[in-house]
Image 1 (spheres, helix red, strand yellow):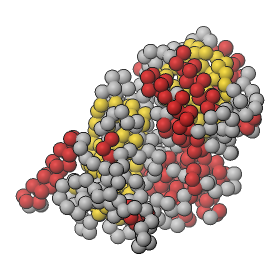
Image 2: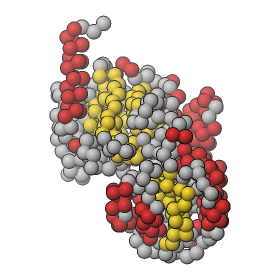
Image 3: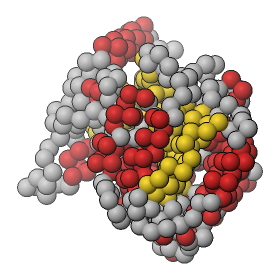
Image 4: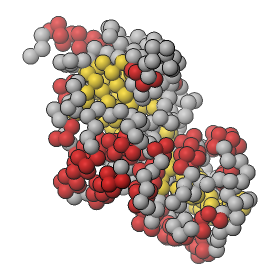
Length: 507
């Protein structure tokens, strides 16, 4: 049993953390911004004061950028929620084609979030927060998992109607099998799955963009919509900028109050004509995005794929991306995920994790490099976060080095979001104690093991850029994945194991 003095100090630390989090005055952890993810060292002093700026890159003493950042005394990590999965699916496509993915396309958080977790679900809109972790064999290093979940999507009959504008790439490169043909098949199946009170519009683009079907209700018009899909054919160049701009104009013209209005971009994102810069394209549609809340959902196709452009468009366009390489994946996206999740349960969702400096020596957020938010902007609702719908889970992994023999409070995770209709802000929190860490990562619960396996795999494909502790060799990681697949009877995890096995033979 803990003594009264120990318990009082513990309560004082937790009360101080809660007070500071509620005040919104917590300062940045890393030289004027949020946690860089490369590493932060918790302050070795009472309270949760602001960290000192990290040393400049390339110091004369020869210390590396990563080592410099690890000396930053910040204790906060802040990021916008991300439910993208394109990076993992594109990596699997590359491996199936007999090549390793370009490391620049490997985003660990998208590998991790490709696997749905069994977190407890909230009763209404918003999030539940789960924080757990396990120790690794590296001295004092653990993996900590922050899990966020929205309500289930089983209440499909209660969702508002959808108004979906499909922006379809019909450039010459889309003539390759598995591109436009896959998109047409998917759209046809999805048309049969949407409700009568849903609406769709079709915009095509090659060297120019054209609205081939204005916003049309499904009820009584399915044959007309199917004919428009069937008539899609490839043409010339890829003016993606014109396609997105025309798509948003069409979405605004067909805007339905009380409906979920989204633009769905289907492309290999190999832009070669007109505006090819994501920031410039987004600026041209900024008014429509901000005034009407129209989100962008990117669907990538093709063996050659403009991953960076599509990912940036979706992230900054308040949406997310997926990648499909075959009819099975396309059917899952268009006939299951999209019709079921056209609803939104949270806008501008952000997470902030505060590590206790009395128990945490150092931490690193794994991935989310393009989703970082300055710590002081956590409660600034003018700063973009992530848009999340029902049935989603979001997972963030941290590599955490605890103080030797650490006991007591370890971390508090807070998620903040805006109600999709009223834009009122809400928050939910979860805590983790040092004593709650599992003794061994590979005997922890299956969700944590799955997330860790996916993260280690991404780290290997990305040439170890995120420096995870106690990283197993790829053959050992494949064995862990096969054991996990056998124990869970999960085909998704078995495919992960097979992908790790394939990569091991290539590296």
